Image 1: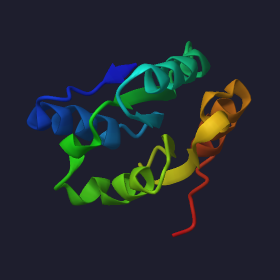
Image 2: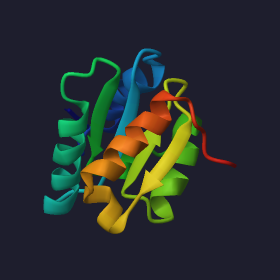
Image 3: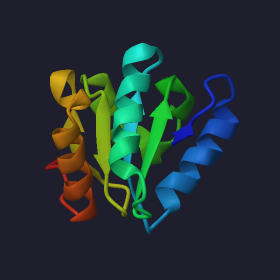
Length: 123
C-alpha cells in the first residue's frame, strides 16, 4: 500500500504520477485521513495481496493532488462522496464505493475485477 504524504504536495504528485503511469496495475484509490479510510485501505490491501496487477493508494489529504488536470475527474468523484475510486490500467475511473460497500470485501474485490477488466465509468 502506498500512502501519499499529506504535507508535501510535490512529492505526493510525483508518487501519484508513478501510479497513474503504471500500465501493469489497476489501483484502488482510498480518500481520507483517520480510522475509517485506513480500515478501507487495509481491507483493499488484503484483496490486492499477492496480485502483482493490483495496488492500493491511500490519499489522506486529497488537496495535495489539486492543480493537476490528470487528477481532476478523480477529485470530482471524491468531492461527490466517493471514499474509494477504482482506476483501470489506463488510469480511467472504473467504479466508486462509499458507505458500507467501501468496507465490504466482496465489493472491494468487484471493484478490482472491474478495473482489471477495463470497465470505465460513464462520463
